[in-house]
Length: 265
Image (cartoon, rainbow, N blue to C red; front, side, top):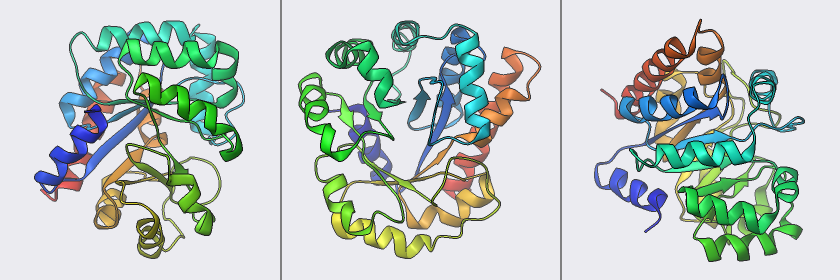
């Protein structure tokens, strides 16, 4: 069983919601990335999303764009990120998902990328700019290597949700609002209605992301979804730290606060 499926099964049995933090691999460096993953898992992260830095991340707001630039300047490359995942897997079985742009995969080589994902121990991929029309080959190769292709839907997807989700696996990444990632004080979308629409087309767990800024917002929306994804707010904790050790401590503390909000304790 894929680690993502196993985790959601475990959470359902315990009537819990998943806390999914996002960090950019290589920000501030790859050694710290490995430490962040292990510390966030210990703090309560259920699934961890690793962003592969990209020079033109169209779906990302300023906070994650700057994080991606820092990682690239520090020399983060896909091969090194794969090695970091291999190191993480020596001491952790937390489900890991890459957020990666399609062009990065094409440049690396689709077959090579997916083979190395499987060998390193990655569980899934979120590819925000993968057109539906071009995903057939990706799905076929990912299926051979046991790597899940996680579908991403938005409030404007509506009648396209069925097509977007029909061959996806793991969970549905539900973008909370139109636009790019970033910390928001409020989400203008009617989340209850939006989640109901998604549920009409798929029984996969629904993970709400884009704009979840902290524990209060996670608590506000937890009853409408199966997981919350927190990216920019975690990245800000890392960026504001004086060194890698402080970044790890601050990120882990923040993850623990959000997990506590999701458990209702």
